[in-house]
Length: 317
Image 1 (spheres, rainbow, N blue to C red):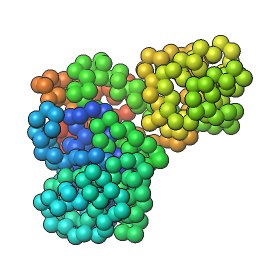
Image 2 (cartoon, rainbow, N blue to C red):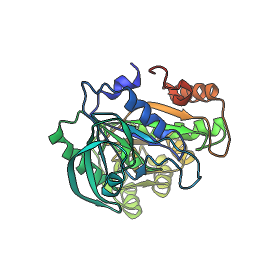
Image 3 (cartoon, helix red, strand yellow):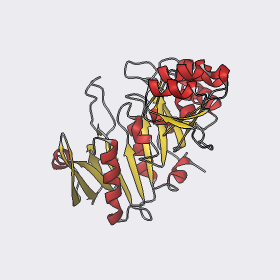
Image 4 (cartoon, one colour):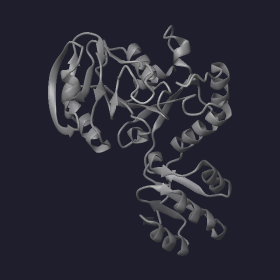
């Protein structure tokens, strides 16, 4: 089933870029253009600011977010006042951002908008819950730069990942970096009872010395914690349990070394990765071979990989 069809099986989907200019907004627009709005009520927002026509860092042109007639959207008061789209105001949230409160509106015609929604994961979750009264079937969340937290299953049920030449200018390196994130997304559920829960390096040291084998990690899993667990593998099996993949901040080499030596990492909650999309062009002029990139990455992660720009919106994928 094409991933556009798969999206309709979920109530919330995050579109997350691994770096700036990896095609996240193109991906979002592609999805928006193909959703069957005649039978689904759809809302969209962003954590952070998205939809600007010019990148504030690289001064390069960016695709703007196009909202279709009938879609709901969430943005700040400031950007709602600056909108260039005919819309109906539905709600003004108590959630405050640096750009004012979060406004929920419905587009009465197609147009472009700047999205600057809730500024934290908890605020985003509350805004999403508030949409229940409007009968929303699907919420799309545009994740900000390196804010993988929007893809946490505590916030969204599924995700689409965008990567590209702006993340790495070498196909082999880009494939390895992206595959690492895909590996983390695919970590299994914890199927066993946790022996002990730890929240710090000191706690973990005590837990390991007691030879607990299934250790719940509250908060982030870091290189320091993982290295210590790896050092203790000779004493017996170790399984580290984190809340979800967005709480893992470890280097790929250490992660793979730990796994190769028999260590395990599992999660309490999982996200469903629906698709990986690539942008083979970087702002500095580097252009990767699209076909080679898609093929190499797809073989590595075992999932279809799409260059949406190359598809030129001509047909569904």
